[in-house]
Image (cartoon, rainbow, N blue to C red; front, side):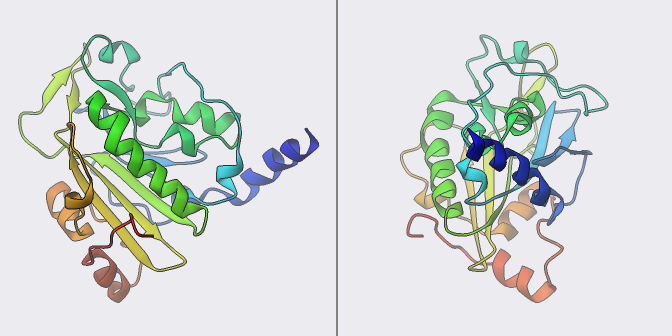
Length: 236
C-alpha cells in the first residue's frame, strides 16, 4: 500500500508532457492533466488527442472508470454517452483507458466524452486495440509522444445521436519514439481489417489529409526527416 501511495504522489510531479509537441489546431484546445485535445464542435469530438507515455506511467493499477462523463472544460459542451446508444458504434477511446491507470485523475480524464469517437466494434476491438497494445510495449522501453484522432476533414460524414456526432471513415495514430528518434504513423479505415501492415503511412500524408501540422516544435531538419519516413511498429 505504501509503495502504491508513493507512486501516486510522485507521478504528477513530472508529468504534464501533454503540452510538449502539441499539433496545430482547428478547434478549441483543452488541456487536461494527462493529455491535451483539440475539440471540433461541428463534429462533437476531438480532431486530435496528444499525450506522453512511458514505463513509469504504465505501472499504474487504478481500475478503469466505466461511467463516461461530459467534459466540462469544453466550452460548447461535449457529446453525451446517449449519442452512441443503439448507434452500432463503440464509444472508442482516443487516449486508451489502459494508458491512463496512473491515478484517479487519469482514469477520470480517460472517460471524458471529449476523448471518445465512434468506432466500428470490429475495428475498435481488434486491429486498433492491437496497435494500442504494441504502443504500450514500446513505451516500456522508450518514452513516447502519441497523437491520435479520426479524420474529420472528409465530406458528408455519417452522424449519430441528438448532438450529431460525426463518424470518421478513418483513424490515425502517430507515435514519436524520443529515445530512438523514430516516428510510426498509421491511417486505418473504420471497419474490420485483417492487418495494419498495409496502413503504415508517413506523417506527411496524415498532415495533407487532415490539415494539421504535427511536431512543428522539432527542428526543421529532424521534422522533415521523421515525417517523411515509413517506420513499422511490429518489429520494434
